[in-house]
Image 1 (tube, rainbow, N blue to C red):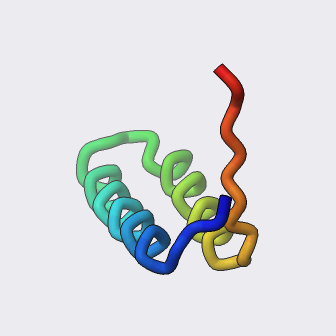
Image 2 (image 1 turned 30 degrees about the horizontal axis):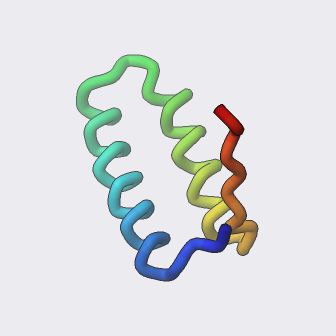
Image 3 (image 1 turned 90 degrees about the horizontal axis):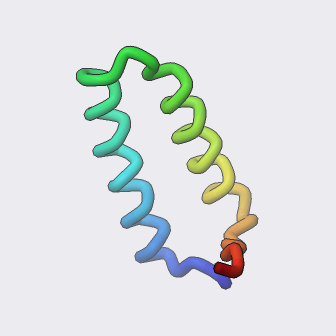
Length: 55
């Protein structure tokens, strides 16, 4: 599944909001910030396939 530009922008907006919240409310912010950075790198790398686990 490939993400559209609009979907990528929405994900980035959500990540921005998450980072702001984490910086002001959560003690273990480095771990969460590292995951946010990893997601951003994946979005920018062009590897936009999302794999869903079968339930």
